[in-house]
Length: 172
Image (cartoon, rainbow, N blue to C red; front, side, top):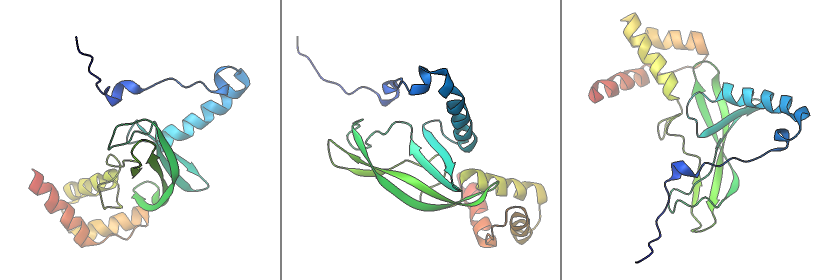
């Protein structure tokens, strides 16, 4: 009988990590407050850890896995700066965690496909909210752009809204 090595699926590699607050009750209040802040910021994906620190949004993976070789042995390698537009919070500066794989040397950042589309700064929730206004108002895209600016303070182009409308019509 031949023994064959196979790579385990990534979903089953979740493990329990014990922290100091698991052993001492005096730290549990701090842990509860921190998890409440993290859960408030993270509305998108359960594998992302999102939290605010001094008005800067930090985003990192819950557990880093190399997308090239699927290794869990990765090292943090700093942050990338990026600007996101949220409907509720407005324009937010974000720092996205960078990683380096210890096995293959591949450099990668936290996967943000659930939060934003590649190459775009407007979040998916922001786009959905604007497209919801298109269905509600039946007005011009300039009026919708004015409403978004009044609500959020973000000056969005009417052409951008028009492109989002055409993009959703193509998908349907």
